[in-house]
Length: 480
Image (tube, rainbow, N blue to C red):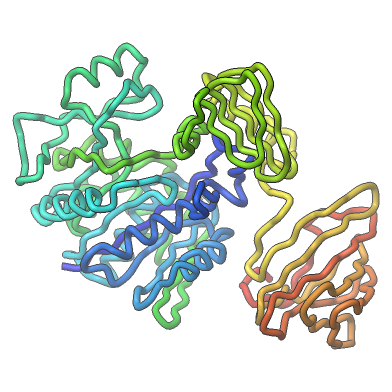
């Protein structure tokens, strides 16, 4: 029986601002040691038995970045499939779309393993054992969730109450008695002491036919709306790859509800596998600091940091020196363009800063100074009234769209590599220290025909320098 891991990559990770931003969310954050969460999730999925395809549900703007991450790890013979959402619609829609697609390509008996792209799992062997046990229960038509043994009274997670009188299988699985909302601390302590309550990990395993049967009974409106969306959606296929772009109009009609509320809390066919797999949802800077060893004073330091008479602080400062004097219980996160300072007991409130930035239209909630694009990256070096200076890096063989700007002109200077440039009616090659000027209103295109990365400096001049002043005529990546 085939197993199809489904990687759900949709959250913005706003509690981990300013490193996590909507255009570069939590799954892509570099962890101590150099890895990131989405690569680790992909490798965990790829290493499971019977896997021939990995399906990822993500926002269409993150498709190229995600695919690059997977291919950096090495996909091998694994088919990479994608369901691309035009906007977030919560987990019930994503799970239903994945199940319907897997049913179409692999049949009713295929098993699906739902994984979050932004969770950390330290014990791979225990994870594989838990999945094996879940698959046995899923084969008997149970919808299986993975419950994490709590080791302190956490108030930021939902809980699963296991019915200890209804043991299932040989691996400690039980029928789920109920799902419980995030509790107050006193109630969380009661759950911890009871011994049959587990943190809700948000990971699931089920047979496709079993899930769809339960969805038809408990949330048919979600299933029907997603089915209509898939029927109206475009699909492209290539060697060991499939990509479905969900239709915007139909997808907007799908109810915005989590799979827990829509189905799991209603179904009588839900089981839980208790796990000790070294799991963390990496939901705040309090979680992130646990990845760094403390010094003798309890400080956890990333980057160049000096501390004097400081205790129990977490500092992330990879770009410049930070110094802490006589303070304690602080979170300090310093990026190239934003600084966060918070007390540790306010870590869950970082999302309120992001909400204020979003309401004010401040781009720092969305973009870093370095922005990833399908063709490479650009970094804003400096900007002011009427000008902006960027460093642009284009991958070998990649090209920007054929485009035009209404409100700005551009000057390109090649730093390294070779640039193939369309500038109006001209097509020219530029090498190191050569340049070209692109007047406002000219159609233009930049491509890298070489074997190494192309690096150039772009100087923009004009009355409006926003990223939305782009008219695309042709585009390799389907954005025109």
